[in-house]
Length: 128
View 1 (cartoon, rainbow, N blue to C red):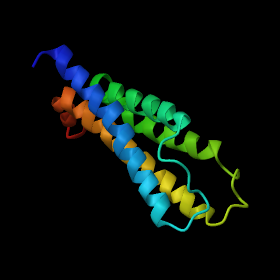
View 2 (cartoon, rainbow, N blue to C red):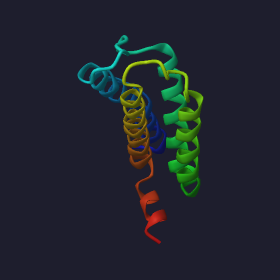
View 3 (tube, one colour):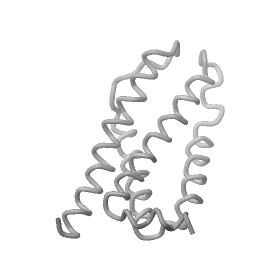
């Protein structure tokens, strides 16, 4: 497989696979946990935020892997801060926040998998 095809596959796994897997996982968690937040399976805003998140993580994994940990930490902190105290009156708000964190971890993991498809040698960056 050529480099262009490998990159296309990597981004397809990251963006589309991540959208489906992370979206379904978060929806499933919301359904099994007693929260007041039982919304539709996929929302357009979540699609765009997730696509952006996974595109950046996949790109950093492939071309700037040493910056990836700082980006992930900052990104999750920004996402969490953006929703801080917006739902204090919602029943079981702590469960909603935990679902958010698990969903972010799943999304970022799939983006890293996409990057790994395109650049498996990147793993050696952290073993040195």
